[in-house]
Image (cartoon, rainbow, N blue to C red; front, side, top):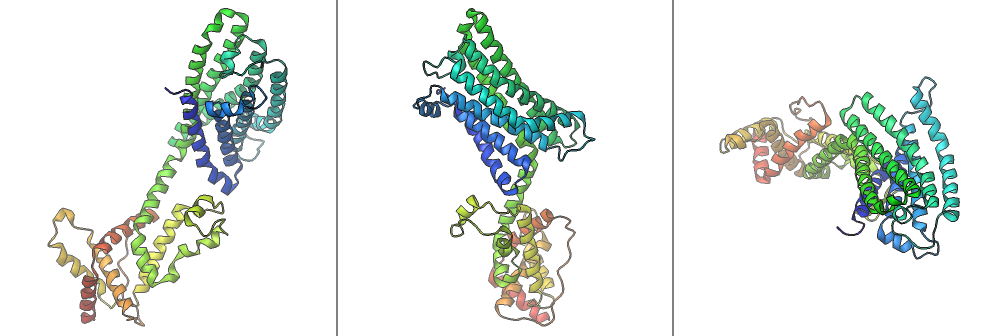
Length: 430
């Protein structure tokens, strides 16, 4: 396995989660979202500072083992952010809140000042008590048995242990009380991550002080380092997974809605070309504000941090635009056009295997739309609109989108010649 493989793996994992969380945190400005994203960013910075490449670059600076001190600064900041994240999840202060919630809020209020105090103490001990006569690639393993290094790490781990124990208790308690299964599982995994972090800290602190008291323990430093590195790897994976599980249902729904919206693109394009006034999506710019890079579409999506329009809203806009455009087509469709479309579908269905036959109503509606668009192209507007299309018992946006996707599939299969023939047949009956 390459040197530092686990360090790079965990650093990339946490960085990916931080980048995934960043848009929501920056867009909405919610304290809890920002605290969570900042916590991920702090942990990611601390993990990158442990990687051989970054550590090698920093080692060129005149301060020996500066990467270790910076790593612990980032870790302390991340721990404070996670405490604030947990406290913010309980909402505004309330005198009737349970005692654990009140204690968590108090801890969140003093955590930034406490972290600053710990940072000062770490710096003093790092500069005065830690032996920095030579650069080290593994601070704990190469300073084992030194009281100054043990004291330095103990100061750092006091803050980390406080954060881990508080979060483990809160997440474990919330997991038992949560009515949502994904949230319950996610919180349980987060509590496990904090338990692993606590075990990691206890093993390292006990070993460092044990090696100070008993020199016979010092040769075990590489083994202890490997064990704790494995615990840390599992801990960060659990941490990333735990905060991601509760959003899995929402992510799956967003993906489904995004695919549905994309599947309706060609039908939407043809109808909007005929009736551009019903294009709700064209007015999204009024909600989003001014783009930072308006001339490059893909860059605009990447860098535009103005108010987002949810995928669900975009899908709803597209469906409403389709429905309004079809309503406008009633002024161009002759009376009986839908009946003629149904006759066409029934006649065409005899040549198709039963298992391959489409939904007859969706197919008829697709033929109706294409024939009405032919009438629109001919400019045959009627003062009195034709009859409405049959109503459908669709109770949700997703159900409507799935219906329109069936219509879209059949619409793509109808040729202009067939649509024209259906239009002529309906006009003759009218």
